Each structure stands twice: as C-alpha cells, then as structure tokens.
Image 1: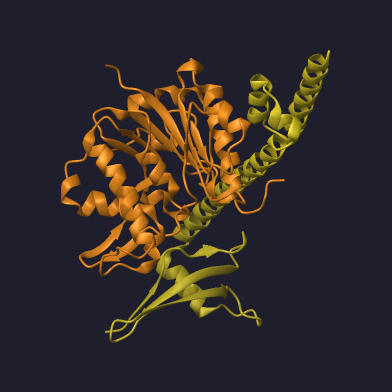
Image 2: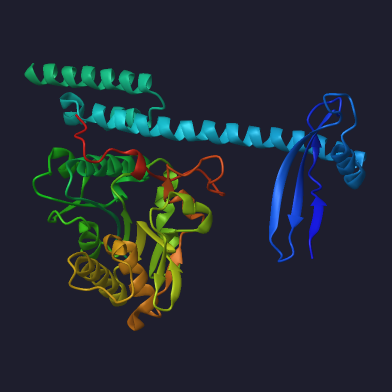
Length: 153
Length: 245
C-alpha cells in the first residue's frame, strides 16, 4: 500500500512566510521509502496560490511550522557555536604541537643542550608561547656563557 | 620490604624518539616531588646516548633498533612498581607522584580505548573467527607490578608474542594481516585468549585521560573529568622522521 506524508520539520524560509522548505516522504507498494526535499512558493509567478504549498500548511498546521522555524534557528545557532568551539580547540591543539616541536628545536641548540640549569630548562619546557621559549632560550644562553666565563676565570 | 618505584621510557630506532624521551624524563623530574625519589630507567640504543640521557636517568639499558623495543624494555624494568610512558609524551602536572596509587589491587593498569575516543585510532575494530572484536586497552602508558611473577611472565610474553607476530613466526588463523604491526593485538590476545592470564587483574587508570591525553583528541568534547592533564601524548602531531635540527 502506498503512503504519502509531509514530515513535521518544515520551516519558513522567510519571515513573510512566502517560501516553505519541507520534505515529502513517499512509500511505494513494496515498502520502499523515498524522501524529497521541496522549496515551495506560496504563489506562482502569475500570483495564483500554490496548491502544494497549501497542502503542506493544512497538513502540518501553521503554528507547528512557526514553532519548527524558531526551533531550527536556535538549533542551527547552537550547532554553529559548537562548531566554532571545536575549531578553536582544534587550533589550540595544533598550536601546542607546533610549540612542542619548537621547544624540541630549542633544546637541540648546543648551549641549551649542554646547560645544567634545570630551573631555566624547566621554565622553557613550561613556556606557553614561542616568545616565552625564545626568552628562556636567551636566558639559558646567557647563563651558559657566564658559566663558561667563570669556568675560565 | 617496600616496593621500589620508577618510570621506564624507551627510545629506539629514531633519534627524535631519544630527544622526546629526554624531554619526557626531564618533565617528570620537573614535577615529581621530592625529586630525589623519582627513579627513571631509560632504555635506548647505545648510539643515541649522550650526557643528557646519563644525567636524567638513574638506570640505563641498551636495546636494539626493534620497532617495538618498548616491550623488550618494559619486560626489563629494574623497578617493582613500574610506570611505562611512551617517549612522545610530556608530564605537565605535579599529580604525577600519585601514579603509584593507581596500582590498587591490579596487576597491570592501562588507559582505555573507548568508543567516544574512537575517532583518533587508526585500527580498532577487527574480525575474529568468533565474531567482531575491538581493542579496549591502550599501551601508551602502563603501570605494572614487576614484583609479581605473573606480571613478569606477562611482560616477557607480550614482548615475545609481538616480536613473533611482527616477524611472521606467529599469527593466528582468521585475523587480518594489518593487525600484525599493533602491539595492542598481542596484548588483546594475551588478555582475551591466553588461559594462563585469565586471572590477571587488568585495570584502567581512574579518569584515564589525565594519564594519557592524546593531544589529537578534540579538546572541546574529550577532556579529563577530575583534574588537569598529567601526561600529554603528542603522538600524531610530531614529525618523527625528520631531524629536529
């Protein structure tokens, strides 16, 4: 037995409610279900009412479409916000990896590699930015130079 | 007599791993209080060892360049309570000293491979002759008690089985070849299939993300629940083959 049903997630495309976005679900005689998304205008180019548009509004009710439209806007905003947060966090993770690699490079600088100043090296390891890494690298270099100078003295 | 405690870090095959290992060891010392009680065993190839390794490690063992030398090293730990940590990790919190409390009455403790973290694993689900299965234990960190004979035997077997699966001298029928490169498979086999380990008490770290936080995880949706990350795993974000300088 075939079946035709408008899905209850239809929403207005504009505030004037002149365009409707909806999905028609069809089931054929052997139970195969297909869905068709439709973008319907209230009036055709000649200004006549669109029967299909009216059919959807009658089937679902204008209030229900109003509610789904509001809910959808809120849902989409929440999804966009979530996506934004995910992207930000993803970028932070990539930035941290780059910073880790940068620190590894710093630790391979001969003077830093040979430095016994554990305190400064710990500071370098905990650095939160490249500038901080550079700053502690310079401090270690100075410390190492001083140690060498004192050693010579 | 009180059990000895220490960390084991393995760096083989690539020099970058040695550099990561040194950084990890130093980062553990940065946070471990009192620092003089922090014991570290570095397992590495002789060609890599330099003063940094000698300075940071209490014990040094030389391994060969096997891809999974970590398992050889784990089985050779000089400490009773041993915390193995992958070299490409970094310690970033003073709770590192609490790691020994995680032993509880377990024999070995891992972090978990869970469905909600599924998106970062290369190969987790697989078919077996008995049906589908999935890895549930992650070997990135492992706390184990080497004072127990069963654990010593388990560690030896894990290395032995991994070695044999990787050189094709052992492989069970009905399992896809792509699993051969994963030590999670040999771990899964020992825990799930070996009769002698049916009573091995395998545990998961409490709030295990603190103990093995893959930096590749999406920070927005996957976070520890009870405190900040203690050990961060950089794994995917590092270029392990290109010389650092």
